[in-house]
Image 1 (cartoon, helix red, strand yellow):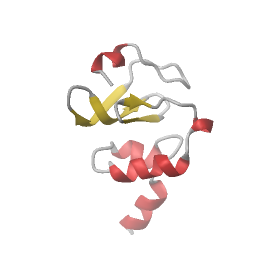
Image 2: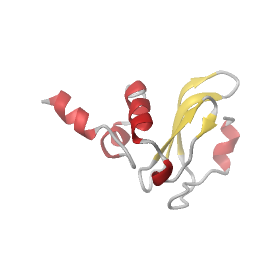
Image 3: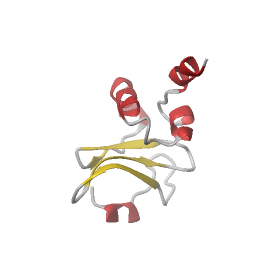
Length: 97
């Protein structure tokens, strides 16, 4: 994904703009990362240079949880705890006890 795309992207759920970008892996383009809507706390993964900005009902929970686990050290705490449609709040509580 090219950084310039962030200039036109809005949250598909609440239409908020601008969105926040967190880059995990980048060469010529952003190959791994996350796009976050600060208004509704929805997050959208960037995998293989493609931003996956799907509505909640089209997202696969298992895949999304695996993505959060893989990049948990680079994802903002707020998204790990409260992100929509999926987050790691249950796992984080278990680890912190």
